[in-house]
Image 1 (tube, rainbow, N blue to C red):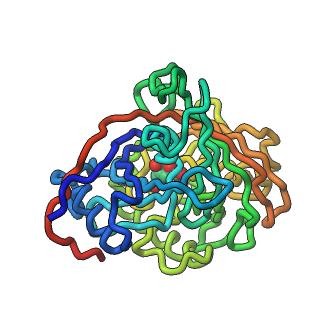
Image 2 (image 1 turned 90 degrees about the horizontal axis):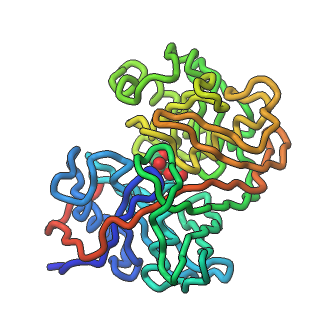
Length: 356
Ligand code: NQM
């Protein structure tokens, strides 16, 4: 019988998750995942018997440990716990939960406070691994969560956390093309830390600024998007993505509120209440590359891309080494907030789930 496990809950960006030290979880991945399903209350649409909130954005786990990489302070493994199925996947990372990793690492003593701000070097260990610098406010030797920074997708202001992503060596258009034709639709497949397929709203017969629930309720649309996703996933080298949470499917249309683009993102079956962090970076890269479905004209020219989503606008600064389909990201930065919600012990329900 497992006793309580140390666990901190934080809102990270516009998501919410359970944060664990790696040493507090079983080292065997199958055992760990089975335990996390029982911690979060999966499989159950409502996750009523666990910490999960019944939505992919509130059913997330961060596993943090000291890094052996001299370039990083801590390693961050993201695990998506699917609410209604016995599935835990590390196929993607999460830039929103990433916002809570710096504060958690400082709170757990993995990284000492450096002054009024502390920079935590984080190695993402999920696929599309990369190093990120998170700068956290730490006046008086403690993490400060309160602040004035309003962040679309969360209702209350908090202290800003700056996240800087260096570019990767890999080109960001994994099919080697800027536009692919899939199921008769033009799409752009892009991966700047999150694999994303962009589709034009008009090609799907929608306006592109519908409420997430309207899109989720449209069974015909969902089936079309999923058929494109399965083919695009294979074309992007992700294999059979039927049970995978990637690629994400972002529907793009003209901006409505002075931004660069309007987005609605299937993640991949529910529609995001905002947009993921690295998802937004991928969208921003497509917007800044001439010829993609997001930007058939000639690029925005600006480094700052303002991605409109259902609950506001997400600003992404992205610097590229432009080279058509071989374009690479030099650096991207975003600002997020996070908040500690609870710290203590969690008790998983007993038994074993039998992961799919
Ligand atoms: O793209 C949701 C989120 C995410 C992922 C998702 C994310 C990212 O908003 O970096 O943050 O797309 O599944 O938490």
